[in-house]
Amino acid sequence: MNSVISRLMRTAGLGAAVGLLAGCGALQQTVAAPPQIPAQVTSSAESALLYVSDQYSAKVYVYSYPADRLIATLSVSSGEPEGLCADHSGHVYVTVQSGSIVEYAHGGTTPIKTLLDKYYPLACSVDPTTGNLAVANESGNVSIFPDATGEATVYETALVPEFSVYDRAGNLFVDSSGAPGIRIEELPKGGGSFQDFTYHGRNNGSPAGLQWVAHRLAVGSASPYQGQCCGRIFRFAVAGEQGKKVATTHIPGELANFFVDRSVAIVTTYTDSVVIYDYPSGRRVRTIKEPGESSFGVLVSR
Image (cartoon, rainbow, N blue to C red; front, side):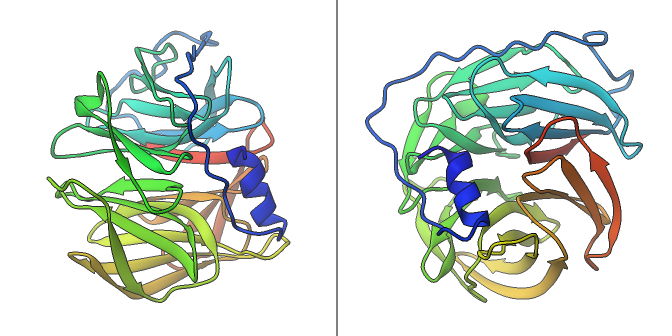
């Protein structure tokens, strides 16, 4: 089942199950990014940029931030752009659901590298301690590319990992839909297999983003019911493979994915709207209308 279809089923109240896809061979994927402006859109590596992937339009929109001015469009020639992540240099990685991960320099409009992944990439994260690139796959595993290059080592997960994030120490967390709610698994740094991450505060929502914010694991939860309301961003204090919920931000609208940047949470909605909320209060600050129709991946790169 296509990841977009499965997510739309969840938002329509048709269930949270995601079908496993297995036994598929590697797919060649090319990413074309004809520059609409000069090949480098920032004059300084310190400039902040907001990246938003749009699944249906097969585009990644790049905005100046926080001015929210559209300054570039990265075109994916085949497949759907899904998750976004960045390394310590500000290089941005785009997971393409049909089987590749495309790297752009910060502010760049031409791909500088493409990695192949035969397991239908959904999300990614870069290990701050090693530079390894972890890619959560719809086939029910995680591909880890050493130093974001070459061939990946594949680690099996219990369920389909929809989002992934490393903490500052190099421990990898993924989350997925699973009874009784969102299920989290952890690959400890140097470990050989994923383990269950247990936490108090389970819910009946669907995964809607995963990020390490300061010393807390932030977990996005979308409403499993039909309609435009509501989402939540939980914050957990983490000790080893245990978590304790310490706070909740209520999102008064649809939540597909989020990125917390300092005092705001930037939320995508599966529509052409990207909504910015005060964080952690959840007060709506402003809305960005993107040219596509299904905003999903979101990232601020500096």
